[in-house]
Length: 358
Image (tube, rainbow, N blue to C red):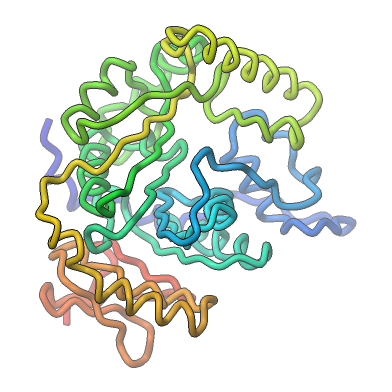
């Protein structure tokens, strides 16, 4: 089914939706904000659901990419900011997008509380509002599968456009034929897979991923990520409860076996897909936004804690045209589309449903 007409029915309540939080206990004195404790439990996987109040500080994760001296990274679905922090630790200037304003605020707080800088904006992954040929790395972890296939394909096509000439994307997805997925998760998830506005996980087979990425990128590779759960990481051994350490240990053992017996990736519950830019542009086209990049870098060097520095890199999600920060710094203006996008608490909200006509 073609859902282009249904785009009009975008569920804008998601932008301002907040998780249901329990009040902070009077005796809590941890350095990790109480709200983030709950955000981690909600978003890091089932093995974190019993960690609320037990995490002493921000969990730190290693992003499985090489370090750089300087580069731009986009994190699609930044959540509470764990991969923004990981990207900053690898040398990138991290820029995160999330559909929820709350998570964009949390992502910035995570960076600041760890003495790192970066940027966040509210956006829908199907129409990422950035200028082309900018990012050296585009990362997404357990996010893109939460959307309808039409949205996912739009996102992948846009990723290719946003990558710099030598840029690549590194994405994590669940495998439909994974050991746990096949017998526990898939049947429940399939119920709402055709609902355009549902954010339930969609599961695809490795062959389906190969077909999708062959069409979108051509140059890609698949890697094992985890077993017996989606998004299980080696660092989890440090943070999860004793009973869940067993789950993590089994997953890591499965990953070790896969490094020895590569075909076992077909039974991985979670995989990474790495793909390189595929656009057939002329070399000069890759530098088309060099002026915007230099403007951003100038602003970033003056005051890297100002989230609105990011505006030169942004584009209108409706027209694709340039955006200008207004004098009051409370809106981004698209002259081409004659639209004004609001800025809330210093965070641009670049979703067409929130724009007002000029």
